Length: 428
Figure 1 (cartoon, rainbow, N blue to C red):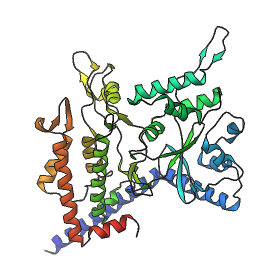
Figure 2 (cartoon, rainbow, N blue to C red):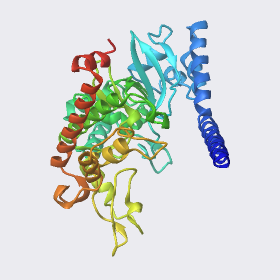
Figure 3 (cartoon, one colour):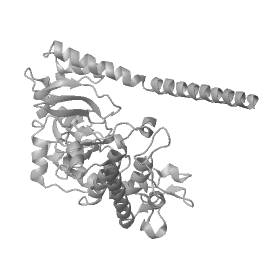
Figure 4 (cartoon, rainbow, N blue to C red):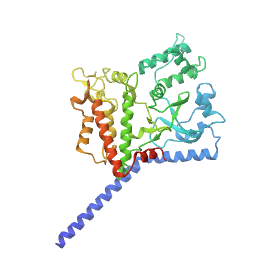
């Protein structure tokens, strides 16, 4: 009996040591992978210190520490234009509290405050679509401003299925470009080829992406968002924020319903990350980057344009699923899933233990588990016609209602009322 007791004690000690070693390895790995965060934190603090010590330091010097210097010299040389130029580069700038972003949002260069409102400054992606052509003498020829109006108008029709009348195009272009200034025209063309910028402009009234507040050459500012849910981690299993996560899941579903109701056609998200959803000062939920959001018809064309393939994965575009034609060995099918399928797989369930979803750690009924599974791999009677992995609206609404009941039950158990939640969201 004594020997058996010793064995149990020895076994318990061995198990404790193994768990401690694994935990130490996990913490070390996590810290190593997040060294970049530490450097950003140092840059963030250094930038604020520079601003406090000398508020008159030029913006291009301040933002150098963020690795993205704002090129005010090009504004002074009349290569850049736009309402944001004077505000950021003038001697009497109305911005303060410049900060480097602390997350991995590659689209945001730096943030700043103006009259208490947060602005996120971004840089349009470089594009290889040249605006000029070469004449017989080898000289670069740029379009006249009237021709540029037509180029912009055609681009918006082809890329977004949106038609703007001539007056709207003229007002949009003329307010940013001096007459026939080719360098300013090139910078503005870069903005118009940037999907993030264009989505913010075209769908401003629908308020689904951060509002564009101004531009300077290829740089532009949008309203800052307060991120609702930070990067998911294994610590989520130990946190007591299940109620907030369920509320956030409902809010994201309502956001997706709004995308499906967009005119002239629905918007499709090919990347959906829980830490990209945030609220503006009016508490409106928006997605921080529209870089991988497309109108439905354009996404279908992209996925079915006949690219050579061996497997279905060759036809995927991020989380948007395509299909490879087995006989033709080409991507010839439209998108096979939809926003709700992506939401269920990547937001609700997540990417496993170290990348948990919003439902990770939440006790679910068998009916709820079945609904989530059906959302990811819908049976034929619950599919959108022609899209094998797209749950239809009926199934999506069932899931929403079940999530709502689950949230209400969790709120009741926690003794939280709707008024308490509303005040919590407002920061009261």
